[in-house]
Amino acid sequence: MVVATDYRNDVDEILPGVVADRRHLHENPELGFQEVKTAAFVTERLQALGVEDIRTGINSTGVTGLIRGTGDGPGRDKVVLVRADMDALPIHEENAVDYKSRNDGVMHACGHDSHTAMLLGLARILNDRRDTFAGTVKVLFQPAEELPPGGAKGMIEQGVLEDPHVDAVFGLHVSSDTKTGVIKVGSGPIMAAADGYRITVQGKGGHGASPHQCVDPVIIGAQIGVALQTLVSREVDPLDNAVVSNCVFKAGEAFNVIPDTAQLAGTVRTFKPETRDLMEKRITELATGVAESMGGSATVDYTRGYPATINDPEMAELTMAAARGVVGEENVEIASPKMGAEDFSYFLLERPGCFFFVGTGNEDKDSEWSHHHPRFDIDEDGMAQGMATMAATVTSYLNR
Ligand code: NI
Image (cartoon, rainbow, N blue to C red; front, side):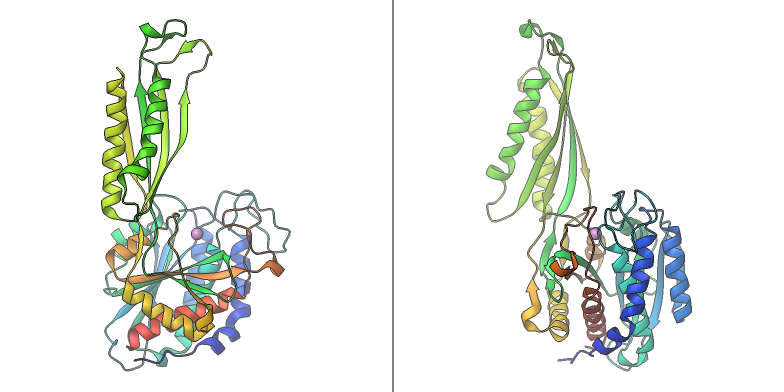
């Protein structure tokens, strides 16, 4: 049993600087794969700290660096990666704060500004306290979490999990629907895989008064839409979870013309790989089968988005223990799975690790607006618990 180092005092000392960094980033948001100034800011900070082996321009704007512990312990040869995402969203900020976005129409409305600032803070703490851990911490700043195919996959393809070989991966996300002071950790699947489909129904258009001379794609599309809703209710294990939401149904222009084609599109959320495979197969079969049985045809374009985010049980346990040390047993909660998706999942496909949630919701600070809302903001005090938990997690991994 390793007693985790307590970094809370270190965190309190540097918090004002982390807040200033977060506000600077909030004022200067950049969209996915365009985080040029953000990456330059990150690089400058890492250089000033003396972080080693700084690499930039990975998958456009990604940055990595190494902090080598000087402690002696069994984790001497281990490398643990901590990731932050850097991108903002195409949203016009409606907050009246003095650090409001100066890039009109672009806003840090998901808290990635705080993720970047917290990871810079973590780099500072660990760099100052190299003696408290053995092994190496690799900090990774990633572009475009919000913009599928996302920045993570490309960074992995460009080798960020090697040279040196990474053994475990950790990441966090702030959460406006979790109270400040609370940390949520889940074991196993915690966020869904997010796929999309497009169906084009081919019928045969004609006069609305003569349906018998046509193949009506509107009716075929309606049948497909209904049939798709039987997938979750009739084909997925009731104890598993999935969503099929058909969000697009377009056909026709004139009230008396049966159109040639109809378009459907929707999103599919699943946790288990086998359920994901089932959905892809059955959506295709249902759409083409229904269309053909009604005299038309359908083509299905199924696109796989981010995979499910699945925490390693042992790494989740380690994170939970670290969080208990920071916020107390009563403030560590089990994260229930969410149907949203996150491209940290790609790191977790490659290495064991844990992605956890840090409460930043505080009614008194008006920071309970939902993520991606033009009024979204965070309670910056939550960053202290985020950094302290991450510091305790990665060092207890390296020291165990
Ligand atoms: Ni986010």
